Image 1 (cartoon, helix red, strand yellow):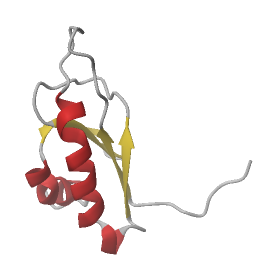
Image 2: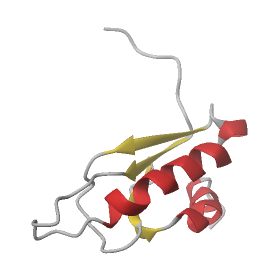
Image 3: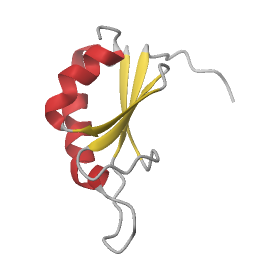
Image 4: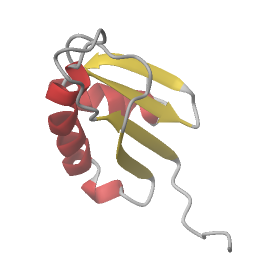
Length: 97
């Protein structure tokens, strides 16, 4: 094992987890997450060294619509995120609230 020299300023974790219809939890992430992930990846293409966007499994929020996004290292949890929210998510992630 060795330490990596790659260190983004922030990392966005986008839930893309798909839940079965028979389960008690909602699956907004499975429906909206892939589009949110793709939109954020395109939006960060020019700043990919500073902002990493990672598709992930369940983040524990399970919104009925939109998806969950977590901003690290800020430990900010967003829910009901849709693709159109990508500019606001990036602004928040980079400290321009």
